[in-house]
Image (cartoon, rainbow, N blue to C red; front, side, top):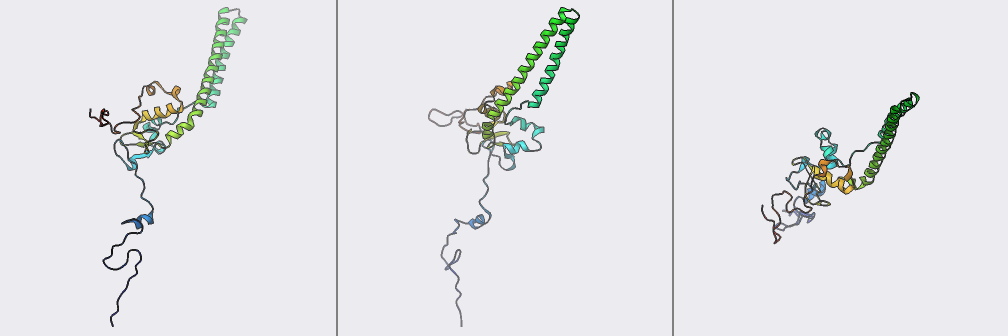
Length: 232
C-alpha cells in the first residue's frame, strides 16, 4: 500500500511551488544572524583605501614604527612640556650661576675691585630674574596644556589616519567634514584646544582647507553660482 510523505510547513518548508520568505530578512540572513552583523568598513574619503591602511589616530600612533617614521609627532595630540622635575633642575642650575655672579661681586668687595663688584652683582641679578622667568613660563605652559587636553582628546580620539595617502579624516564627517593632511589635523586640534602659543613657526603657517569642501578628493573645482561644482 502506497503512502504519502508530508513535510512540515515551518520556515523554509511547505507545499511544492510555494514561495517562502526568509524570516530573518533575506538570503544569507541566517548566516548573518548566526555570526552577527557584518563589520562596518571605513574608507578614506581621499583615496578610497580601506582595511589595514585605515586606522584610528590612536592606533596609528601606537604602532611600533610610528616614532621612527615621525608619524606620532605629526599626529601629536598636545605639545610636549617640561615636567616639574625639569623646572626644578633648571631652577638649581640658575641659582648656581647666580651664586657664581654673587661670589664674583663679593670678591670685588673684598679686593676693592669695583668692576668685579658691579659686574658680579649685575650678573647675579640677571641670572636670578631670568631663572624665575623661565620657571614661570614652563609652569604656565603646563597649565595651558592641562586645560586644553580634554578638548584635544575629544578631537583626537575619533579621527582616522590613512597610510595610503597620509591623510586624516573623521568617518562621521564631524567635527571636520573632509580629509586633512597630518599637519592640518595637528593645527586644527591644537587650535581648538588653545595650544596656539605652543605651535612652532612652520605649523603656524599651515592653512586649513575650506570647512565644507566641494569634493574631498580635490578633483572638482569651486562651486559654480548655480550650486553645481565647476571644473578648474
